[in-house]
Image 1 (cartoon, rainbow, N blue to C red):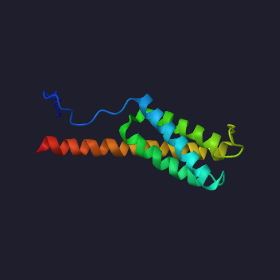
Image 2 (cartoon, rainbow, N blue to C red):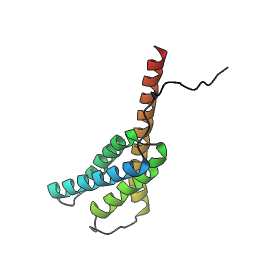
Image 3 (cartoon, rainbow, N blue to C red):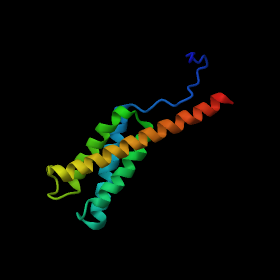
Image 4 (tube, one colour):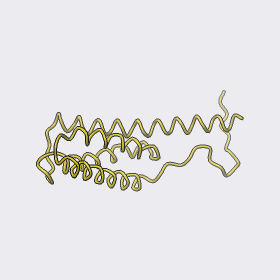
Length: 131
């Protein structure tokens, strides 16, 4: 039988996630910086490298976020990727299989980053409380 007890100390064993708007702002800013850097480095070429870099950045940013922030984070980064890394430059276009794949990749990266961080924090908290 599991008995739930409230922890009396003021210390939280698992850190609180960052506010969702802050995560979105950081993700969108980082996406703009990365896409701009890749465009300046090699011009507007194949956006695959941009997608890989954005996926890694999304996973990193999502380590401090709630899981509910993942769709918005992926969507904002997809907007930047679609608008500034793929032709025509500065216009949003929609090509269903291609864009769904890119959005799915960003969404999976956001979810993996969040879940990995949450599991890691919970495991560390378990070991701290157990000792």
